[in-house]
Image (cartoon, rainbow, N blue to C red; front, side, top):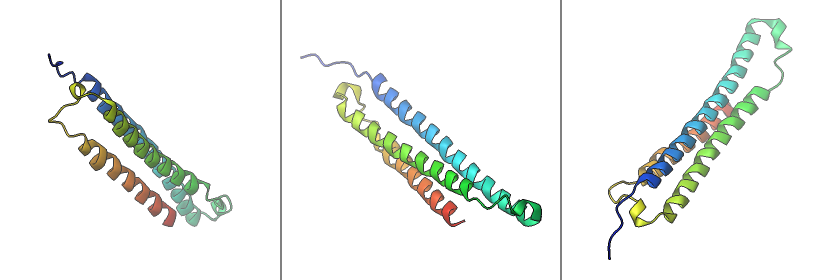
Length: 126
């Protein structure tokens, strides 16, 4: 019985897709942080100028910022789960025996998602 040559193109395409989702999710988290930070900036500006104080009564920027951070974190977890499910469908000839995909899955994806949730909690209390 002839063995198939090891073709890792599908595996590495899956890894690139996971990293693309991570980049996109980090961008969403960053956008949420900027939106929330803008709300804090407006509040500080209102303290300096009493004329702005009446227009800063809405906490909409904080809620929007936290929502973006949580959506970005959820996207990371979803991408990591999809990545793990797809890897389970690959044959042995499409997987590398010396490459550990757990590093990308656990250390990178889940850690960033947990930090995103921690950032959302910080923004909620700020």
